[in-house]
Image 1 (cartoon, helix red, strand yellow):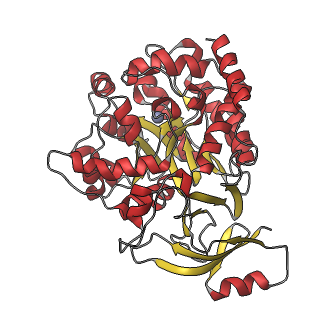
Image 2 (cartoon, protein in one colour):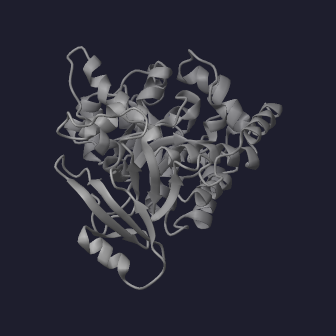
Image 3 (cartoon, helix red, strand yellow):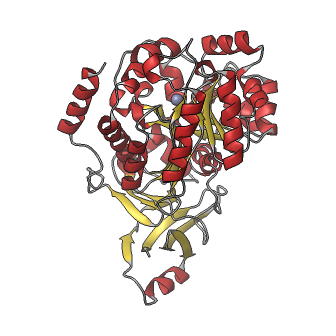
Length: 447
Ligand SMILES: [Zn+2]
């Protein structure tokens, strides 16, 4: 059983802006926080397995970041063509690249992405996979020790998808079921399988309805894209007579276990549909700007009562998996509206942490309190370029606007240290540059 004592850090629990405990010890055992304050060192002093100690004096402890929308299969497709919108970008770069993966290149792509996540303080991800070789994703996630929700992607529409990246509804859902039996709940529950129709444009009506029924029977998370791009929205409207969100509701895919990526081109009816069915939205601001998709109406969604989490999307449309960049952009974009609004740094931090956990359906108490999962990040405000921090009453603006990945000292998932800034290889998880080059050459040879 893992035992970890984090000594003397400032605990920022992010439940309310006042949830700040300076110079406080934190003790985790068996993957959960069991004590804070004086009780923490008492519990750590009790006989048992050896206790790992982290000196966190002068450091800030925050809940782990949650990447609520990723494509680890696309990490090796980073730095592709610029200036394309969603559909040509998919057909020209992403889908051929995904179809060219074998089990080995997909594993390398996932390791690279997960190492980048852990090094940036990410403790949980929701990953939209690809059609084949999905065991490689789960193997990489098991090795990383991260909380991973993912699975194979479902896409079956012969009119819109390439033959080498397509599976019938029956084949696709049989593969999800195979993955569920092999991986769901493994690694102390850190690995979970989600049902993932890619987006309505790539899926037949029958597949979407079967996917909804299957997810409901097995009580699995659902992850899909919707209303990212105007051309995509028009295609769905032409085919179904409905907006994307209303169509997802109609086929049964909008549930409290559903996380919808993007939701940019949405209206009041969509917002209340999402809120009423308790579905969450993953806001991916960098990707949305790079693919000229538009800007998600985050203030409206939040006012309607929708949980809005944050994600980097794939490295192919970002081109970085950096939660600090997404937070900074999410906090800044409301200020660029015709009628400017503000989104407080504290709220953006909640979106990147607790709201992300809610979007993924990760159970557990909020806050760095006994009973909460021991998923947290040790930030070093003295690293890099974030000093001074004395001017602000609250530390949240410093994290969102001044800090970056270079301030992440340690990442802890499930009570175990999974990354230290002193080890840039992330425990050997990060593929070496020659491994990355070899995997890309292998991918290219199959294009
Ligand atoms: Zn995506």
